[in-house]
Image (cartoon, one colour):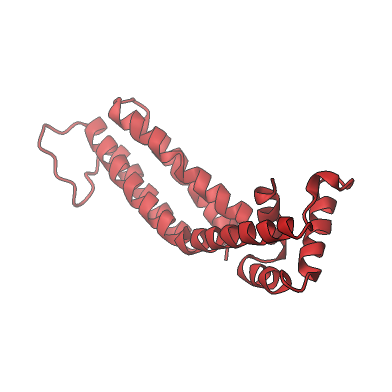
Length: 185
């Protein structure tokens, strides 16, 4: 189970895929190297989050390395005369697609969990505001102290208590505060 910050870190990696695809489209000479660097960064973040898919990403990087050495990847069909650059770019493009699928699939459950948590937090905050419990701008405490004060007010409320308990069960205490900070007006 990923924390919200770790999930965002991985999602930010995935947001770099469109730029890499643009490099392929523009036939940038460093496309394969850029994909390899992106894969290395993915591996490091996945290992740091103890996600076993890091091994699969490393194996995909191995395909790019082999292509750089002139080995045509299995399953790729070329209609034109082969050059080392065409092999590298084709392998890197295929690996990029496969890595994105593997990584996106691995974080899909956590992304859905946090999306549900954020939706629930919006509802809780809306009810709390209606009841006069959320007065973020009126609280003198800075940052996290302010969030804890607001959260404490919501958890102690008889109507909102069960929803806040559900939130903590869904995303954890720290991430509940992160979501609260995101949805506060």
